[in-house]
Image (cartoon, rainbow, N blue to C red; front, side, top):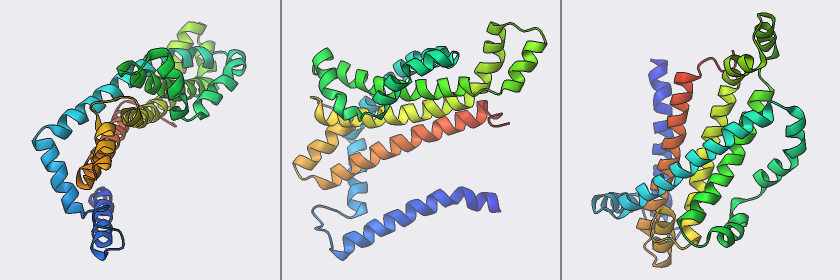
Length: 252
């Protein structure tokens, strides 16, 4: 019984949020043109997906986010393993990694625009760059902090350095790697949305939000924002499910 109630808690939070939104719109504290009632946004969301307007934008954003994440993973995981395997090498590049990881991605847009020009490449590249740094950091941290007792046990049993790395260290670092990947795909989505707003886009949820705002189509703007939020929540939930399924030994 308690498990069922716990499962319904997120739904209760969503209902409370919608009720507060509805009461705020009903009170007239904010101009209803600027903040329509939740049902108006829900209708706009339904129509947007029914007529294909939001459907196309949604899948374009998904495609850019997933592509950026795949590139970031392909770069960040091997580099993270390599850097985490040598504390001296990591110490030598730690400042560069932390510096760019702490720099807002939007501040890097001009640099990527100069290199890649206005188009798809810039959106993908800047999102992949930001996500790769987060993934790299977490993978390196996971490798460096793998439990030394298990590594020592494998060494005593006669395993070589490569065997210990593959069979012990990488498995030990996998929970932290998944933390990095989950953070990486969330960051990739944020950067893609912002890039769609400001880097010459003709589609995508970010472009739909900014265009709806410019023509004061507020229900559509909130509908696009909700679609972006639902996408982010869904991606995060997907990674949590995968993590619990395949990395169930984390912390043990």
